[in-house]
Length: 206
Image 1 (cartoon, rainbow, N blue to C red):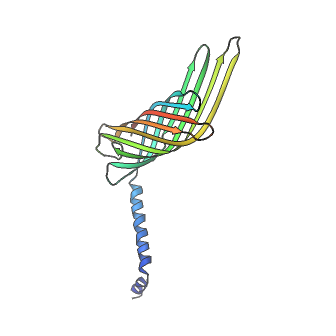
Image 2 (cartoon, rainbow, N blue to C red):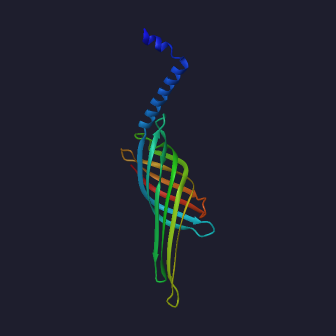
Image 3 (tube, rainbow, N blue to C red):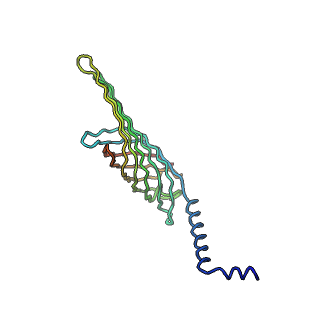
């Protein structure tokens, strides 16, 4: 009798709040455990254009880890990831040497559809589009020989942050959850050193 008296004394509003909170926690737990980790590696080109100066193209290596959150449709997902792009270029000649390095790391949220969006989607083709905010670092060194035997050495570096966006397509390969991804990206830095940064890469996703 005491148990039922205590239970009946709880206001309905408090009981409903507790039930609602429990329901939200259960749904969130299901959502978190449904997440999928995906990653890919690839290469391509990165073009960085300082404001008021000529652009420079660098060959790249890219590693892209991300966490995908499948949606109820079974064909789409939202992913959060950090495509890490490393670019390096160098040249040697009788007149001098030069070397450039770039590192690009935006944190992006993407909408994925079809191939690569979720595991075992069964789709042969897919696409994605995303946006985020990231970091860009660039450095360079130049060493030239002038007439008369004088050497000219110039080096510098800059780091910037800014908004970023990307889009691309994916094509499923094999019977497992592997796909080929063609990715394009763009970043506009907004700090003291302003850069337009363009990327074109091809990845193999696991």
